[in-house]
Amino acid sequence: MIKLKKYAAIDIGSNAMRLLVVNIVEQEGKEPQFNKSSLVRVPIRLGQDAFTVGEISQENMERMCDAMKAFNLLMKVHKVERYMAFATSAMREAYNGKEVVAMIKKKADIKIEIIDGKKEAAIIASTDLHHLLKTDQTYLFVDVGGGSTEFTLFSNGKMINSRSFKAGTVRLLNEMVCDVVWDEIEKWIKVNTQEYDEVTLIGSGGNINKLFKMSGKMQEKPLSYIYMNSQYAFLNSLSYEQRISELGLNPDRADVILPATRIYLNAMKWSGARNIYVPKIGLSDGIVKAMYYGKI
Image (cartoon, rainbow, N blue to C red):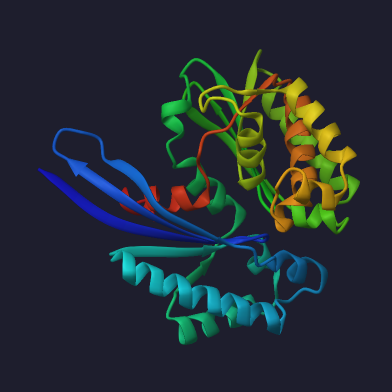
């Protein structure tokens, strides 16, 4: 007998918002299967407001409210039985974040929880990482967002350490990440990886997924440091307009992809990693799995 459940996750990031609807297939004696039913991404760059002015603008509050009303209707049509909505860096830092949450609850009937970087890292790490982690190896998991980047170190199948830094793509675009933050990241990575002979990176986030897609590689194959470096140089040689017209990138992806690549490259350099694996995971996948397994 097969039992089907429908869960949804809403990820309100600093660069975009996502609604993920997942079919969970339960069968006796087998591990549950999580199959993506629908993914909707809306490019509302909240970080542009939050990191430069300190509050979410009236225009973006209204756009966000419209998006949430649409998400609510989509969940209804999909017959979603349970959902959770989490907001990250931009909403954490906007001083009117709580006011936005209250307005959306009232107008769109969606309950949003603003989470800190530690919880964000833990939720992402609760995805299917155990399938990827070879127990005798060391991995640095890097999730690059618009407002922050989460680093988690795994060794022998266990989580060793985790840290969130205020270095995200939208912040970098606005030149709001000072050298001190880069120095802190470098120090943290070097201190935490120095005792391991070999470290492999696992990358998560919309930009690394795009880079991976552009590489044309098979899902379980990694991207090398050399490839990432040449890709960075190639993207850098194109103008913003060329990245849209020649590479077919979304306007809200064409600018952030460069700072994101820079973060991954630095993480590889400082950890000595030669390869980066790109599984299809992110915060929304993590929310669904954490909900299902009763972790949140």
